Length: 232
Image 1 (cartoon, one colour):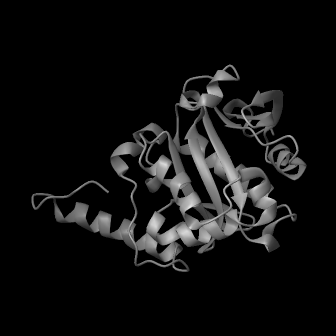
Image 2: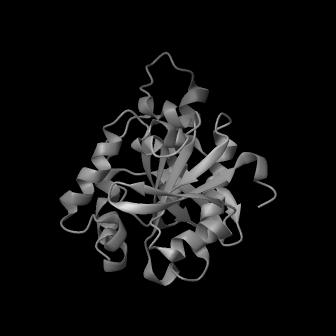
């Protein structure tokens, strides 16, 4: 949140206070005593995710909440050490491994923002929303300006394999398209070996575009087009 000096109006202060209270409410199950490293001044590349509104889904109210390392590291590192997650994310090990991955994004220029997916007040998934057109991924497919990519990790084992990912992928893609008017499509590149993930993207209205050979994996290039948003 940008610094506010003593000349700022009381109405602006009230708005900031309201925003902070809302974030604390929806992340109440996480340790709220820590601080983060990300700065809103870097968020312009993704249209201020910190201000994106929650959305209603058939499963409850869903919101993307930017990560704060001090508050969220232990939870995300725990998810990364699940063997079924580690097979694809390759971030298992000590907390420092996950911290480095998060820090690279939070200390960068804002082209990638790590987020918690919060469903009805409970943090239950990890997301990365990134500018695919500014990412190394753009070397491997015909990128368009403002293409926006998403990565998803369902954290709780009990939430996997029951269609929850499909619902949340659709909700997250719609949040991107709603809050990023310059973006004409949402991009994803799940590992082709991860068939449940590929199926979830297809169920969420993404279309299979191509197989792409990326460093470390062969991926399915998935696209959710703004023009087809209400058709697929």
